[in-house]
Length: 500
Image (cartoon, rainbow, N blue to C red; front, side, top):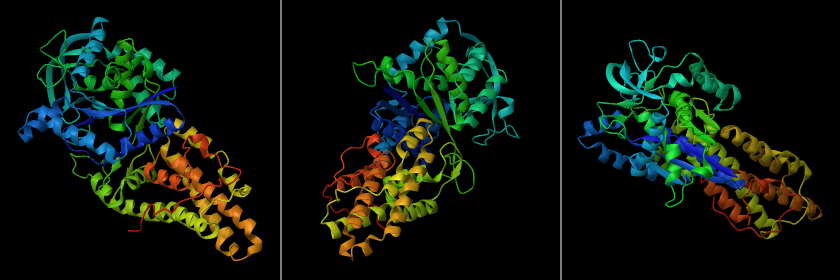
C-alpha cells in the first residue's frame, strides 16, 4: 500500500540547525516504521529557495540568491545522511521541473477563475515572507515568530480567492477530524477558517527571485504558493521517466512546524481544491524546540543548538533518540547539551546498552554463545503482549514520542527481570540449569523484539544488536515475543553506547 510522507522544506537563508534535524528525524522514524510494515513508502524533503528572505540574505552576504541557495541547499542535503534520514528524494524549488509544474498547477487555478489582480496593503514580515492579519500581530506591530517590527507595504498583486473556499474548508474540517493533528492544532486551524477567510496575495510584482507567473511575466508567485506545491510537483520528476503522482498522491502525512500551520492547513487545501486535486489525509503539526532563553530556537534569535556539535559528541543514534524522547512530538520543549548527556548516559548506555551487553555476555559465559532453544518465560512474554500493535497505533497517529515510551517501558522491564531472576546466581547451581536456560532465552528474545521496534529510532545500534543475535527479520510483526528461544549462536558486541 502506498504511503507518502513529507517534511516541510527548509529556507536556505541560513545553515541547518537542530530544529531542522528534529523534523527530519521524526518524519524518518515514521517512514522507517512504515517500511517495516511492508508499506510502499515515499519520503520527501528538500529546500525552499525563493522569496524575500533568501533574496535579502543573499544581498547581505554580497552574493546572488542562486549562489546562496546552492551553498545552503548543499548543507541541508549533506545533513540528512549524517542523521541517517532515509528520504527518497530531495527537492529544490529552484529545480527547473518544479518551476514548470508550479506554473502548470497555478495556471489551472487561474483558468478555473480563482485569481484576480488587485492592490494589497498590510503589515508584512520579510523573514516570514507573510502579511500578518491583525490578530496575529504582537504589541508594537511586531512579528509573533521573529519578534521584529513589521513593515507597512502596499503593492499590486495577483490574488487567490481564498474566501471562495470558506464553505469547502469548513466541510473538510467537519468530515476529516484528523486532517490536522494533534487536536490542539486542529482547533487552531479550524478557528482560523471559521473566523472568516480573506483573499490572499498570489504574486509579487517587485520581486524577481521566484517562479514567473505564466499569464503575467512581470510577476513571480508569492513564495508560499511556490513552496507548498513542492509536495505535489516532486512526484512528477523524482524518478526520471516515471511519474509517481498517481501512485502516491494525495500525501498521507505532511509533517510541519506550528509556525507554518496557516499555510498548510488553510492555504494549501484551498489551493488544491482550486486546482481540482485531492487534499492530503493528515497534516501533523509539531511544536518548537526552545533555547536556553525559553524562546523558539531560531537562526534570527541566535539561540540555536548546533546539531553537528551533538553528532560529534554523542553520535547519530543518540541525537535521534534524544530528540524523539525528550520533547513530546507535537509540543514545545527545551533542549540542550546537558539534557542530551542525561538521556545518553541514563537510558541509552545504562538501560538499553547495558541490557544488551549483559545478555550477550551471559550467553557467551554460560551457554557458549548460544541462545537456549527452550520455552521463554510467560511472565516476561506477558509484558510484551500487544506492544507491537500499540506502537503501530501510535505511529499511525504520528505519536512517535509516545510509541518510544511504550518501547522503553519494556527496556526497563527487561532490566528488572535481570535483577529479579539473577542469572549469575542460577549459574552457580547445576540443578537450576533449566531455569537459567529459560531466563537467558527470554532476555535474548526481549532485546531482539525491542530492537526490531527501535530500528525506526536508532537504526544503526538496533541493527548491530540484531546482527549479533543473528536476527534478520526487522518487520514490525517480527517484534512479537516468541514462545521459544531462537537457538542461534550470538556474536560478541562492543558497547552500543560507550560511557563518556
